[in-house]
Length: 546
Image 1: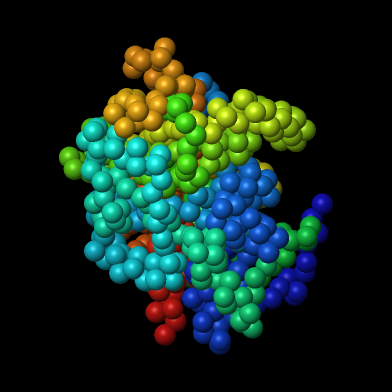
Image 2 (image 1 turned 60 degrees about the horizontal axis):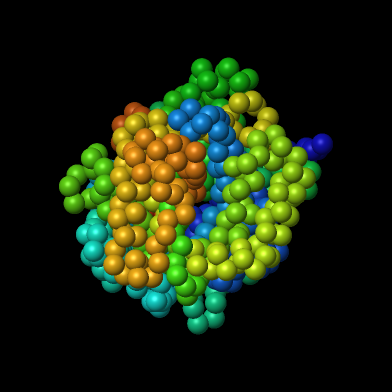
């Protein structure tokens, strides 16, 4: 049971950053450059020193299966997906999801940003910020392999064009070797923690507290014309003790698109009626908090080659338009060529228990561990190892979903999980686009170079050729790509939660710097856009402090 420290024990800082993930590490480093500003970074997870697999590039698959490094959440039942509760994990610990992902660094297309229609946020506006980020990150591409070159040849036969630089703003119809935030020379993962924060951890004015889970914002009502409330600090739980930290200037939420709206709602910021129904006194009426949730659902089509794959990374990506709701010439889907020997075992260890066990059994612990033991045993068998070494897949990712979900608290207890509804396939066009994507994946696998390499389809198999069969396969096997966004969307209208400088409407001293502010999700992976948000938030904060 948690105890609570007296308010008199609360420490005071100039800035408090909640969340040491992809954006939060960048914000904390930038704010602490001024030695006169005292900065507190709160991170619920481990310090990177306690999880060295988050620092080595080739250990990414082991970071992914460490239960300490992912928030283990489940959705509410998904009506269009066999009513299943689907896994909704995300990274925790310094570096956040950028410390456990496969290190793909994709900016997204120019259309992704231009379509927001927000002054100062067009692709031409953010391009210099990406350039500056990449100078620190030192992004690289990995060399071709026999497998990846065979995939490129097959994709070219299917209408894709090979491209050297997938970060020039044009993605539709192109494929190539993705930029990755790693250093192949010393096997270093170049997360925002490693690149920005770790070199500066010794600063006397920077306090980093790990194992510190924020539970509520400290707010007070004001009489200001613009603001209804003032953010004065944060309550957080550390080592079983509820503590308080005060902020002289600003609090910055960088907890991610699933946690930042939850913290706002626990603090009385959101839809007033919904908050009252769960026992929270509403303080600031912002009905859009927790709405507009987007994710990239994905499914994999697996094939068996005639020889072992020589690829151990997810490094080859393609983008195309296979649906109808984005303009001609803009991509709505992403295709990843995946060698099973790279991380299929770890993917099964992580995801199979979440799909095979009800959440109640999964959370008990021992059923999950028992199933994982069976998986480990199976992968020790020679025939299984030989099979996996020859397997490869095309991961079909819905990059521009029309469906919109929600994140809402179900009780005033900060230890209770939020009710997460990604609303997969709530709009039927999303399902139809993914069916088209599966068909294109099969077309690519039938290209001459992959036919020669070996292309016997294993999953979903020869019986799933009709669109109805593919739809059934999708509904039974769809999973998250961990690309959550949009739940505290940025804008200039009354529906937005933050303004163009990422300030929470009607609240002084509070900003949000994470993927929750993105109005419409890019077709790309979310790590680069999340770091962009952190970089821009840091710039706005340092400029306003001058």
